[in-house]
Length: 490
Image 1 (tube, rainbow, N blue to C red):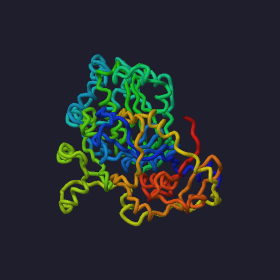
Image 2: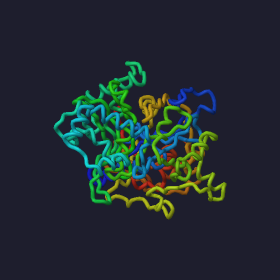
Image 3: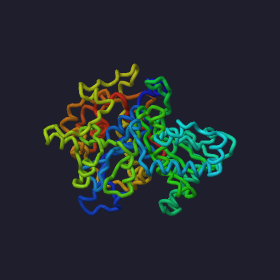
Image 4: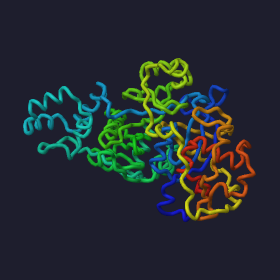
């Protein structure tokens, strides 16, 4: 089977790095001095991701930083990471969030415009009453945009927001450089165009469109939501638009608008996009309870936290936050079992739960013409890039991976939500597909010369590393991805 074309495009392509401990925590900034500061994660590199496949990954505790994918071990971490999501259809802005929108809108249009517009374009009493009693997020978010304003009069500033491809431009880099230097205090020698490109441009997500249940088209892929005032770019929201969510990757802004609460405005606009375009869910990234700078994420409600073990969503309410205060590692499903299943807590199932609760789907049929004999050189393509990838990349919350050390065996880690070695030994990986520089065709794993001679229990062998990736992704997704052993530029 020739890999280009529609058949190859239905797959996602992943390269396994492995399960390892990072040398420094980007949240508590502790170096490794004992068990309490260990922060293990499983890492992989994505050369291509379909939005639907990545949606399933984020619903299994994964995130991406550029092309680097990682799934943290919440049990073995000084700062456990938990996935959050917010239901945009149920969201009601708090008082301070409404005030932030109103202050920004007033800054854009100006007092003179407000006064003259009220005289030239008066609202009806019913409209005035409605606006006084109801804060319509979508209406207020779009209100200061140039095309929404009635003219005359003229506003103080011209404001626009556009959704653009995640490509590199000098205009975007200037905002990034200013943000890293002024807001986060990074030294100039640590900020580079190459780092910006790798971190926030050229995502491995494929760009697609899908039709929602209401018949409207929805964009999928990675985008830059660009905010401009008087033609000058002042902020960029880096977004992954997935079938069921708007996933926030990063938000950066120029110091000139720091007083206008840009971070809060960006979050509210992303929530409005999730509601308006039919994605429904807004994913703000990982939540780290013992990190003060993460607390802003829980100010948007109602939010749900993904349980690391049963991969279901639990309401993040006061009771849940109290558990985070008391326990280093929180597992809601286990507490529910300990109480006999009667906790009264709200559980929201994933869209894929209906599948996972029954028999797991079989892998995709073997593609016609798939290569039946694979060259041994695929075994020699070792993962020499792993440490470099982790040194260079940052995550969506500015986590510094540092140098990866202390490689360990994922299948012996007791990591939450990961099958054990014994369970993986029962998984049929024979029809897993691989890709190599040595053939234009996809390679069937069982046709590798060494496949039947290796045991996944032997840590470090090709088969064990493949088994780790399958376990971290989920055995039920075997038919949706290809293990990509092609060489990549550094």
